[in-house]
Image (cartoon, rainbow, N blue to C red; front, side, top):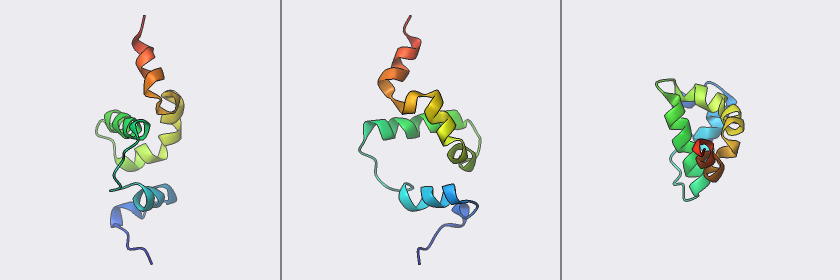
Length: 75
């Protein structure tokens, strides 16, 4: 049985995040950008809310493609 932290036990998405992503080193630039953007967007909200809304953020930020996002500010 996997021992889990109490903070992740509220729902399946948080459990999956805990088991598959939390504390795992990230070496992929796009994945690192995803976490950076989610941290920026968190702005004092709890992380559970961010995980629940992750798919919405993926849609808003072109699947966290940093080349596309960097083009947002080009005139």
